[in-house]
Length: 127
Length: 255
Image (cartoon, rainbow over all chains, first blue to last red; front, top):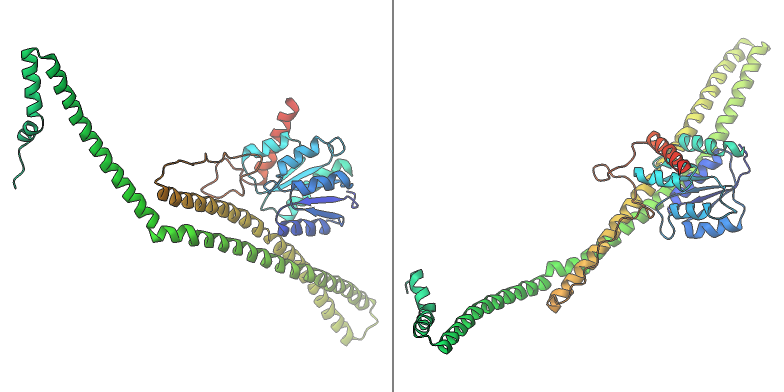
């Protein structure tokens, strides 16, 4: 996997952003930016060259599913790998996220190993 | 005073008008008959209105009592806002505690990593020196003990590093419990609004009904973490998620 990939981590809880950032650092990814909901993430994605998006679902402002749909409908961002990292656990939601074009879905609480596996799988074609 | 039997009460209340009706009917006195019917209807309506008035008075008295109930006023005006403030405070405390823990994890990880790496190097050097055979028996024995000590220090350091990652991951509880607490705060705020309106309505005599329809659940906004015994139709672990994701992708491909 390329270690110079730029990540955007979107979660309304700063503790979770910090956990993910630490795990990404442990995996060798040092280039990680943060946003606290879809509304602040979308302009960042549109103006800065991010390679991967990791987003929560349930956030004030713009929730993760809406952010995912906005990303998929923007020609410049449409092919960006998106991983949902969320406590949203209803079966319909996971199917809905898949239909909206999510590349990976990790349910909270999660382990460092599961996050690493899903990222590796998701980013394999880009490596 | 003893109560009159039912038949006597009926006779007293309706006897006269019934008699008039009978007499007017027998005499073919149309005008008198209709007047008696009017009188009968009036008597009946008066009873109905009396009952309604009594009901209204009782309702007003209950509402007055309700709005003046000091427990309710205290609940709506102080205790529920207090409860929200307390929950907000819990959120802040858990947030601070999680960040403090992560500060310590982040500062400890490089220290233990450095110590473990140095121990591994020293263990290798001790082994090399011992195996060269140049040392005296005393140093040979000491090198062996040092090698074993550094090897153990390296292994322990690696275990501590792994444990620190687990400590970091455990801070995720703050996100999960925080999401649940936020939901409860929203609920308490709604309850507070409803109670305040109820007290206001009771003061006005409940003349208007402002009840807003409950907000529909919205898949896009999310539902928060699954709660055992409450949440329905939720997944059972990451394996379940992976299968559903594959299913969703297949459905997307087919459409």
